[in-house]
Length: 105
Image (cartoon, rainbow, N blue to C red; front, side, top):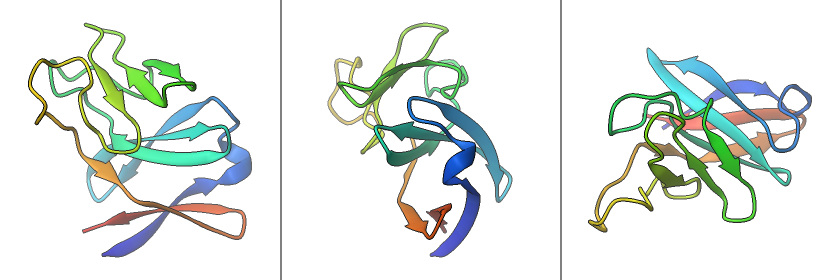
């Protein structure tokens, strides 16, 4: 695993998200109450941008704005799909000093 810097903490305010390019992939990074999460940016249903979705900080979930598919930010699990085994890619996030890193293969 490689650690890749995606932003400074100050560049991603509480309750916000941003899209970053890492190893040819778009990854959505979220700041929920000071904890950072990272998922593949494309909804697995129709490819909608998750960083542009609706962030529910209380449930720690994001909902795609195109067709309302919801994802758990900690695991990438699709919480609105009837099957329990549907996930988008998720990444471990590390904070070092004032910088946010994600682990990528």
